[in-house]
Amino acid sequence: MTDPAPQQSPPAADEQVPEFWRALGLPGLADVHVHFLPPRLLRRVWEYFDAAGPLVGTEWPIRYRWSDADRVAHLRRLGVRAFGALAYPHRPGMAAELNRWTLEFARTTPGCLPSATFFPEPDAPGYVEAALIGGARLFKVHVQVGGFSPTDPDLDRVWGMLTDAGVPVVVHAGHAPVGTTHTGPEPFAALLARHPRLTAVVAHLGAPDYRAFLDLAEAYERVRLDTTMAFTPFFDRFVPFPADELPRLRELGLAGKVLLGSDFPNIPYPYADQLTGLARLDLGDDWLRAVCWDSAAALFDLS
Image (cartoon, rainbow, N blue to C red; front, side):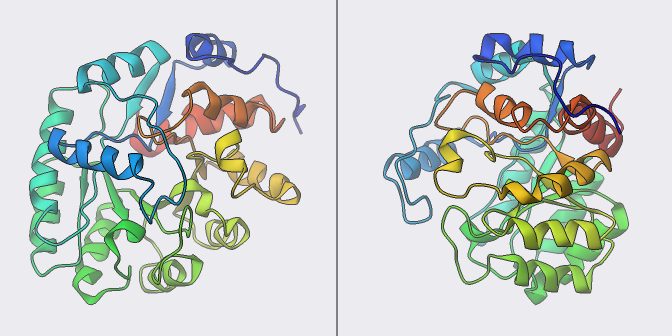
């Protein structure tokens, strides 16, 4: 087993992020949990965070309240070479237009993985198929915000299509920050029982039910977890990761099942905090390399 001690200092500020990944011998970072949205919808999302809405549950000042161009430029400065443009609808009739916007955004933004979404509605299979034909390589579903069950019958064909295509879907399935009827490991486990070969990435490591979602990642070959917000001081105040599960997290990371996620730009702290939190776990440079680049590079065939 390699020495678990990291060999370089965690980045104390965004300006130090490139030094961090270069010290690991990486070509950059791959972040599977980044949001870009149509301007009007993004403003509404930020207003919701500003108001500490019922699904947020706490004060949440947006750190990177910038234009699309400025946020893309900042990702480049950080060395984020691959990132999604995750969008998600909160009601029927939104997803198809969101997909048109995010796919066009990726087409004109080097490094952005073509991303799409869906909602339980009769026309979901049609616009998901169109998105796949249009090159979508990453999907996002937010069970909490959407307020729907992942096993909704209108989604059964969609999950089957994504399973057959092998295209990953980032699923906000956990209760954090505020649980709803359809969040938590049980509804997600029911989905996997129906579609055991689904390539799913559980957002936020499934917080706060870390143990149960680690179990699912171990049980299902194609289930992965993203690190979004986990191990940051902000998140640890509410849903700290259990220290006794760190060995299992290390093994899953080395197996390619833990991916870097950040929630940029909708975070109330510097991007560097995410990387610092991961480095301070002392799970080793091999683990950091896998989480920050190698596992996503393999999943998305990045060069």
